[in-house]
Image 1 (cartoon, one colour):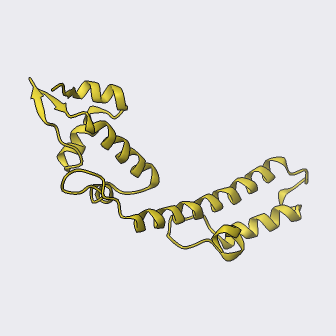
Image 2 (cartoon, one colour):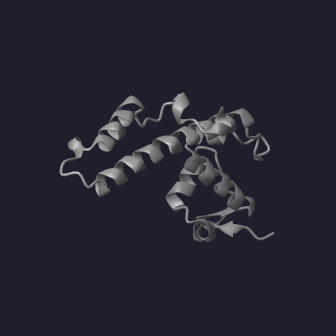
Length: 149
């Protein structure tokens, strides 16, 4: 059977060798053999690295991602965690859209001073009552989409 050399894994995934070695050290991935001093991996490592990357992009920690793999190394992802993370991301999207709108207004506002602009003052007040944060609080009722109600 042909295994992937660590260099091939790096080339195919873009994950640096140091990260691969760290993932192996903490048990996220496993090398299956060595060719000289170079680690060799099963082809399944590519899918696992994709799942790890997706989990990191979604904001899961490496210990949380590690817990999402069963003893047989297959994904065993708790759906309740995914629903909670999706809600958190939705809240962040709403907050970021609001921040984007404020920034665009500031950039395009024709008022001589932003503090003289009623629209800017209203937008500024709305951002101070709903700060952008990473806490898992749900968005205020007025900012929720109709689908969330």
